[in-house]
Image 1 (cartoon, rainbow, N blue to C red):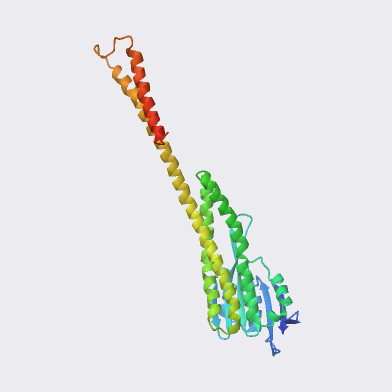
Image 2 (tube, helix red, strand yellow; image 1 turned 180 degrees about the vertical axis):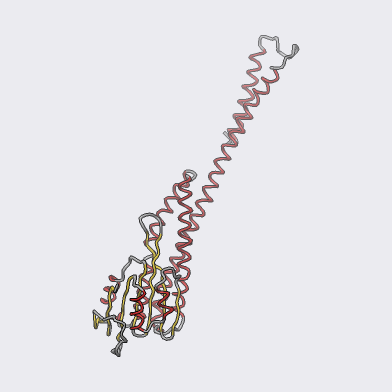
Length: 324
């Protein structure tokens, strides 16, 4: 069975480090004691055995085995079922999601990880070292697991934030290349999906922090409010990064329009300057015998002087107004 750890705690201390999980009904629990069973990618048969031992609701068991659940919280009698989504970066800029389901009772907590590479072993060791808080019961452990999941979002955001800043700086210098534009839209897709995951997580943590729920002591709500605060900050960071990507596209478009406007003005200025000799040459290219200065020796240089003077005046004028 893919049981990472199965232990019984009493007063914050491990009472049984190898608690058997065999599908048999549990014996009478000592006072202030609770069980914590952690599973990773269990099969249906293995989950049925755990469900029989802890009297888990079949609908919750079915949801725990479905890795595509959105974050949510359900109440089944005296038990609370929580689904949280984990996230991790692959080798590139793609976020891969997993799932952690939590079955919470007044004297037990069962965690089921599906598709998540972040094990709870280090978290369990840290909690066992803090016996004062561990003695508060399984609701504190549930808070710690949710906090662990939400804190796992931060390295992802930091890595993506660096990527967004790099794109933003390069977009100021020149219009983004097609490959950069495709990267921007891929990142925006990642952020939209991430936002759809974190939104329900916000609702879960908010309900845990303000609602009377079985298995959760009212004094423990302050811990869930801390997780809620972390989720809110994460949401704010995701929203900010999405807005930054949108502004990069808009700013790059404005800069490109400005650059194209400069080019258009330059072309218009040179066209106006070249129109002068073209017009004069066109006039003198007509087949007329009687035209001013046509047979004068100084006629040709005089026409060139007029052309140069007009073109020079237009050039200085366009330079003054910033078109050239």
